[in-house]
Amino acid sequence: MKRKDRRKKKSMTKILLLLLVLIIGVIVYVFLNQKQADKKAENSVANIASKEKNTVSKNSSEKKVLLSKDENHLPILMYHYVTSNSDELPQDSNNIDIVAFENQLKALKENNYKTVSAAEAQQLLTKKEKLDNKLVWLTFDDGSVTMYTRIFPLLKKYNMHATSFIITDYVNNGQGGILTWDQIKEMKESGLVDFGSHTAQHFDLGLQTAEQQQEELLKSKSDLDKELNQNTDMICYPAGGYNQDTLNIADKLGYKFGFLDPGRNGAIESDAKESDGLLMLPRYRMLDTTTPNDLLKMLEQSTVYNTENTIEK
Image (cartoon, rainbow, N blue to C red):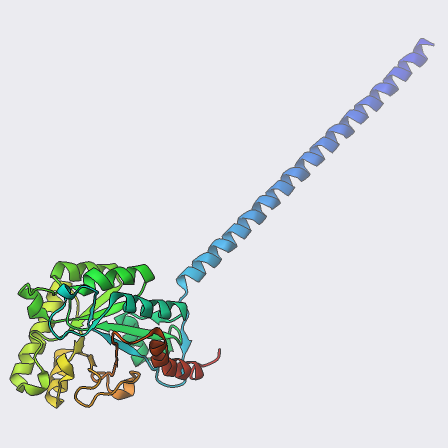
């Protein structure tokens, strides 16, 4: 009887040990499987995050570029002063009221037009690449202080670019109503405004001798290059005056882009394009009476042309 009891106890002990081993095995199996599942989940989350990061990085670094079948057309708008205060204006100035000007900027924004920097405009005019089909170049003649006090704040407000043409001797002499070098440098550093030459003294180049033109164009370029640490390659002809000597001298001095004054010296309002001659780029004259609808009509032709001439990818 005792022997049977011992055998029975031994058998029970074996069963219990077997059960214990089995339970431990199950626990270990579940633990390892859970750990592997957790690791897979972590890797999956990491992969998704990595993909999202790469997508964001790719999208932020990529810049949409369209291609054209033919040369691009670019409307260039010509402004001078923008203010509602008469004491900021010289006599017979070409002024636009600040409210009218802001309404024009709003029309551009609401209709998805992009204002280009000088560098973007130059590339657009010399290559078949473009950032968009709805582009416009804002230019401002004379270097009025309203460029800093009135126009610059609105460029910042709407995140728009512009080019200002400077009469350098006016700045050097501290002439009233004209920008200072400090104001010019601040605007340039913002990345929203770039600068070109409007000659040294604002003489009509077409009425000057070749020697006088050489002096005007060289001095203005030298001052801008020195003060702004740049290679000035844009010249806006005062009163639209120029002749063949002007073009030859400008080219020799390193100017690559020249701007006309519509209605002066035979210049007409039209879109700029490379075949016009880069030193004879036409512009549209902006007036105080130019409504947002008038502005959009000016831009319509180039938009239609550029859209029709876009190469489908």
